[in-house]
Length: 157
Image 1 (cartoon, rainbow, N blue to C red):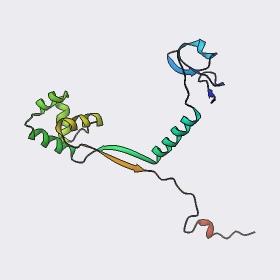
Image 2: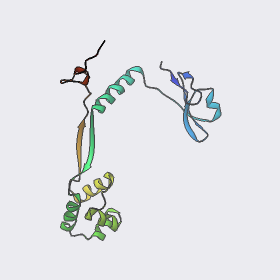
Image 3: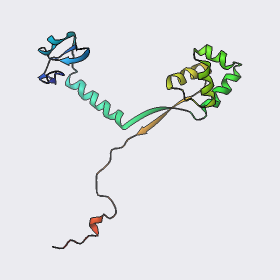
Image 4: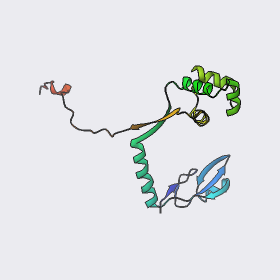
């Protein structure tokens, strides 16, 4: 079984409890749980489950997906809204947003957060959010091609 340290006293322990102590939720041993209110027993994943989680995390670390707004999103939103025959006021009321927010988005002075952009996507039927993948490759430490300062220094003995 895996031993984890108590958040309060630091002792290694196999069984921990989740407790609220002084308004903070901590994972504590049985001895320290008397200082607060125990709300649950902490269930730890098995060794096999932990290995799967570690492998999955390393795969995710090498590739990262980022969601970004498309370029020209403000013009796209404005043209689509006008094509639907809606004023900024009507459009704002239909999607439950402020008219000033719509105005700022359409003028490009405000970049909507992703959740608002996705709401606009659904209502207008246009693509406003794109996924971009970033791949992080591990740095290989090997012999660099080229010269270093040490290649040119003559050391006298």
